[in-house]
Length: 362
Image 1 (cartoon, one colour):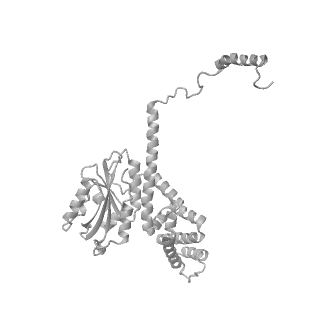
Image 2 (spheres, helix red, strand yellow):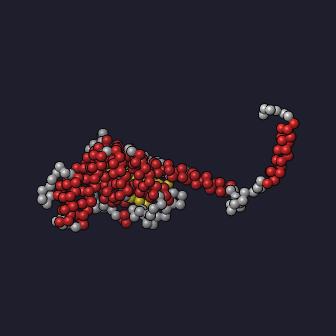
Image 3 (cartoon, one colour):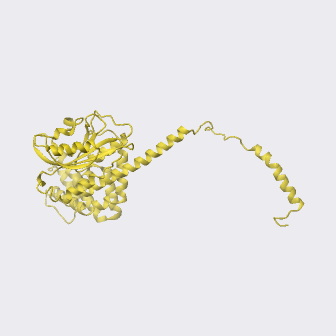
């Protein structure tokens, strides 16, 4: 008989199965037996999960934004990136690994550049007359630059010179290649992400309390600003007087002021007798309107020396449109004063374009 047969035996079996179903159902467990039986997923828990998910997505967004800013500045000033490599073993390892997989000739240059720097550190800590350091230099020259046989006692300057040439060659040909790679993107995201949970940097005003709603974001921003090859300051616009809460070392080098001199103060301390009132009004208007601007202004260093400052201001709001921070970039264009206002060179335009990539919303 086929499966569609309706003979008596099949009808009998079907009836037996239907009758047995209630009995089988009685044997099924009525509740899940586990230690988590009493856990309730209520509306508050779901809300917390949603908030956590949104925070994660937001953090990914601003880490990516800040990576783009830093990459743009480093492509503009490849030498500053090379300086950072020497200060960051993590970055140097990523740089070496990238070229070990893509360009062996470039890897050799990286090795020469790094070895010359390490040797120079030994010389700084000891003496170039130290026979062990000289032996190290001879061995490195033999291994890394076999075509250059140094004269007796000349291995250290020979390696130093080779390191400088390797640096220039990498800056010209390969730094931008690395910064455009996926390896660079991963490196920057990891470095910036780690900073959000790290300690306060000394360049951040010690009397400043990090806002609870954006502490990690602010630490990341400060770290990025610290790496930039230009002078920058950061003010909290929610505090009375809009005090400077951060400035990078390049700002101190430009103005001659130490962090202790001005953190917690308004940036008016740079103004002096010949500061243009029209420029001051432009800055005040920009700050009142929570806007961005570029303006030339005569400022003064700590020793009283004047300099022509091409100032760029960038406003940063929160998701509720509250004006939270203002970032200022200072460029000393005293030597370029004649060309400013006629045809600004591509260097200044590139710097301002890179600066404006900073996020407008935290």
